[in-house]
Image (cartoon, rainbow, N blue to C red; front, side, top):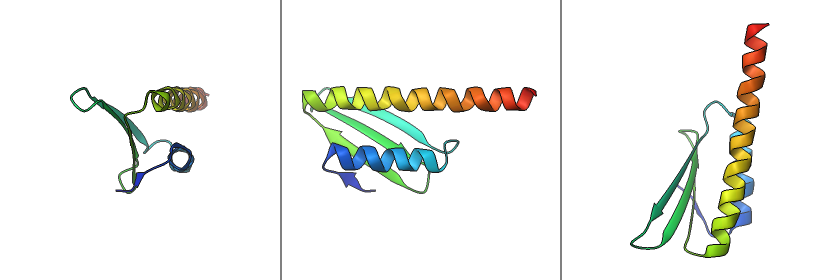
Length: 86
């Protein structure tokens, strides 16, 4: 399970993993208050990407990235639903 040290590398790899097969990709956010760590994990069951941080500026980047992925997921599902009903 590769743990990325820089946000840029992780975000590129996670986006690539999601776009390769959107139906298998999962995103998990986990916050540990005791440590003050936020962890984001993106997986498709064969590849698992992890990024951990305790920096406040990284939290905003993670939040933005997570919302972008959620928009992509909703858009893909909306297209599939309209295609299935036609």
